[in-house]
Length: 200
Image 1 (cartoon, rainbow, N blue to C red):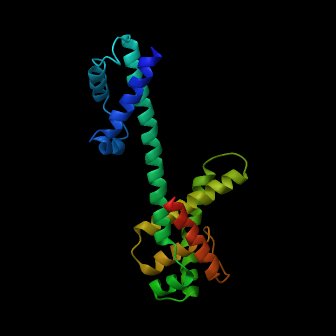
Image 2 (cartoon, rainbow, N blue to C red; image 1 turned 180 degrees about the vertical axis):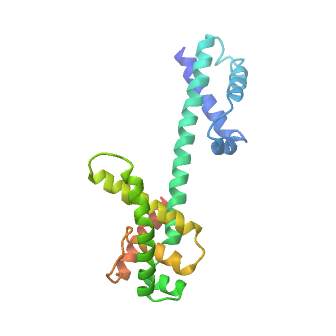
Image 3 (cartoon, rainbow, N blue to C red; image 1 turned 45 degrees about the horizontal axis):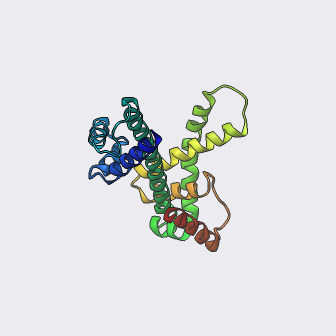
């Protein structure tokens, strides 16, 4: 039966991949089960796939459905990762670019960043204190991640150039106020790394 069932599965995988509605299914994250049944009903009339027990056809449908569902989930995750990296790249600006965009000095941007950090830090601490237990590296990391997400979301919702630049400054410095002048070469290297990640 493997001589017929494996080629049937391969043929199903191939036909689904070539279907005109494939991109729609990719967006939805699933293939209509009825379509798989229709394909199998058509294929089982061909001599090379005929004569298998009913459970083999049902198994082929289930397997193809599972393979594509898993692959669709992977693609969706990759898409979100790429979108996140592209959003990060748009926001990532050198200190000089931030000064030009906000039309303020770096000291003014840092002052605004301190205000923003003061405003949001209690909120992120409150969220992390709701969970009981010992303070560990993991909870500190989670707290930082939560603050990062809050700042990132605020950046997306903000129109004011100075606030956006202050948020960008905080985000690129891992939610901290950097008192050290930025190394332009290091910034360019880090930016290029992100561009390469997106290209890959």
